[in-house]
Structure formats: structure tokens, C-alpha cells
Length: 92
Image (tube, rainbow, N blue to C red; front, top):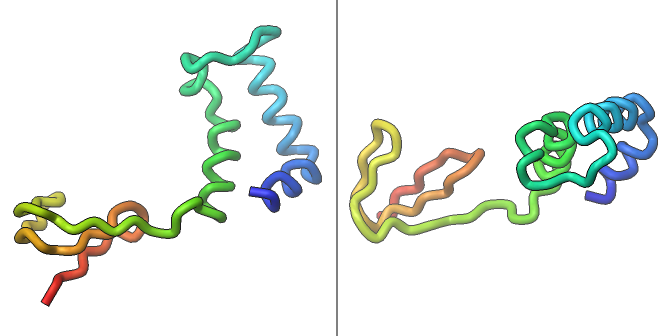
């Protein structure tokens, strides 16, 4: 996330908007976990950094039993790559 921090530091508009959200939501107190849903812009900054540089590129799972994803039914043994990829890879 180094690049995202540099972008944040160099972009005064992003800093100002983030600072304003923090002041509005928190005032002069420290954040708590209850504030998470109220800090939309701060969360967007973090998620954008993670989108550009995810800590893990993809996680692949193998279904141990029959599986249904939305309206797609597959048998046990299928390899599933969940997340943004939304792909199913059938084992032959």
C-alpha cells in the first residue's frame, strides 16, 4: 500500500475530505469499531489500496461436497476461485 499512501499524501483534496469525515464522525474522540460503518470515505481509501495491491491474488478452494453458487450447481471436486474473479474451473 506504499503507492496509495504516497497518492494520499500528495493529494490535498483526498486528505481534506478524509479529515472532514473524521472530524464529523469522531469529533475529538478516538475511533471505535462501532464507527466503522460511518467512516465511508476512509474505508473507500483503504479498499481502493487493497484493490490495487491485494494481499493475496486469489484463493482457490476445492468443493468437498456438491455445491450451489447462485443458480449454478456443481458436483464435489470442482475448483472454486471466489471473490472478484467469480470463476468456476471444472476438474476433468
